[in-house]
Amino acid sequence: MKEVIVEKKRFSLPIDTLFVLGGIATSGFLSLLPYENTFWYKSAMLVYGLSALIYIAYLLIRERILGNMATGILFTGLVLNLTGMLRRAIESYQMGVFHPPWSNLFEALTFWSFIAGSIYLLIERKYGFKLIGAFVAPLVFFTSAYAVFKASHQIQPLMPALRSYWLYIHVVTAFIGYAGFTVAFGGAVAYLIKEKFKDNEFISRFLPSKDVLDEITYKSIAIVFPVWTASIILGAAWANEAWGGYWSWDPKEVWSLIVWLFFGAYLHARQLMGWRGKRVAWMVVFGFITVLICFFAINLYFPGLHSYATE
Image 1: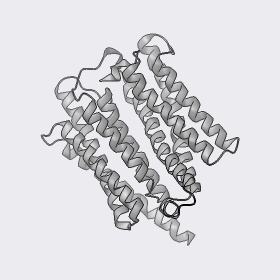
Image 2: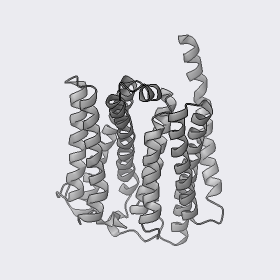
Image 3: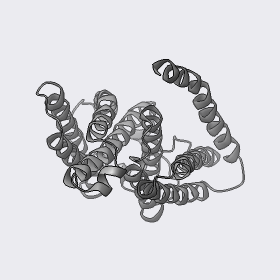
Image 4: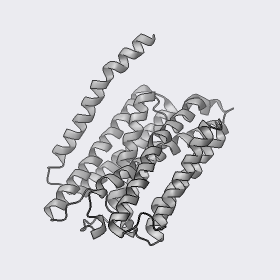
């Protein structure tokens, strides 16, 4: 039996690679069509919403075809999201203000959706559990919907401080962290629901075991925590180059550090103190609240050196 599983994983890699390369090629082709970037972003949002509904239906009905449909539709949403990003980069180039599509609130949120959905599909592929999608896909949809309906879609020239190669690496690492914490939050919520209704046969039947949910939550954080650490270090280097100092206690810097301390405490508690179960799941939930404060509250309501991301 083990040999069969190994063979299956061995031969799935080229298939996965082909799907990824095919998705990238499709996005590249679609981005050349004469449609504005917002058309693709709105299309991605609608497809994310459809995938969330089908993941929830799969959670309730457990028909294999629904699970496969949910995965395929989410992948389609990611392709459309990437198309919007590529098209927006092309449009900014045509306007003479080229920049990567993650510099303002609209671009950041849609980029967040893309990275979160991508990380989730990687975890789904690795562990084979599609049920977590019922908790992650709605988050991806709501993040995308907030960008589409609440943030400004206008392409604007970058502020002088953002015209740097650091924008390509610091922001990407930050959003990989945001996305990984989002997936971990979905796993923690599923764990707490399983724990709360552990005597409910309906819930017990339709959710993975608590050990699996705990492991998925932990792996999501363990993978992205070093990336978040790198983001803080890279941000400090960029700050020194742009503003003449590595650390200025800007609200964004402070809350990025709080997020780092929170999830660092989670990893410490789980690895060194042996914490498991409900305690660490609640730590992830409260940690994700610090993530939301770090991005939304600080960007929108607390002016500082990072106020460029408010529109």
